[in-house]
Image (cartoon, rainbow, N blue to C red):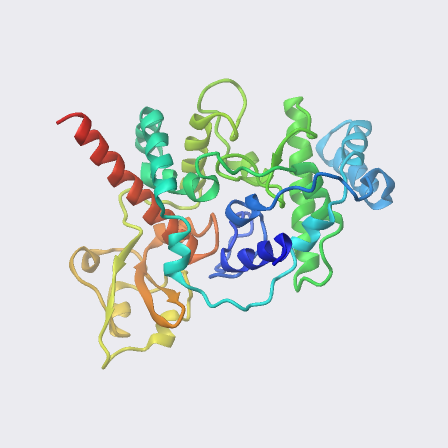
Length: 375
């Protein structure tokens, strides 16, 4: 199997993180944003074979328009965007792969909750304990959720991507594959991200030719898209810039700020165990809202879901989360508003559970290590 075909297959199986600038209930719909995992394992081509966008009238017109909108020097905008190069591999990677593989939570989980990631997570927690504690107190987002995000996305900075972001964004802005069922919408989205990217670097007086990331323009340890960086990025280390590639303090605070901005509720669990009463069960009705929390505890149970313990005291809405296991019976949990908040980072319920479970495993391993060191 070729690297490209393998990447496309992984792309289908492992939904990539979705910028929450287009938030809507999406379940496991694949909206390509290129943050993390399979995207990072696809190597940028060593030779830039496509033409430079200086040759494209459409791109140069876009540069002039964004310069006017953003009060940017038009010569600078043309010069920078003109150096972007079309990457055919990026366009190909955005094409939906054939749905040939059944979703399998157990397999998906095994790719993220493994000894390598857990050990790296423990090191990350050890090295940045004070920041994690302070940020959790300030934003109300648990350290283990932040640790889970950074681990799932890039293995704590080990796999941040090697595509030049300017090339990737320009390719997707002007050469998004026409075969994609939502090509026009997605191309417009990436034009917005390209504009944010160029405006950010003009304001910061930094070069947009330097940053590298995923094949869809996501950057840094948490794989933020440019609009997410502009909206949620935090200069936590006080050096007057937001650096999500080299400043773990900025990374930790930015992820927490992202979740807080998308409704994270301090102290609320992400999910509860659930079972079913076969005589009352209306599974279709329970699954109809997808991952959007809709049901009160009473209406949830009236449709055959069975809750116990703390779940019975839950005050907010719930959603029935279904995680398929190939040919085996699915796994179900009752997702809260905080579970939904994680899916604003990536619209996949599988992704959200991987973040939750990796964070939990790292926390437990870190706690054991601390106990062994301080008997």
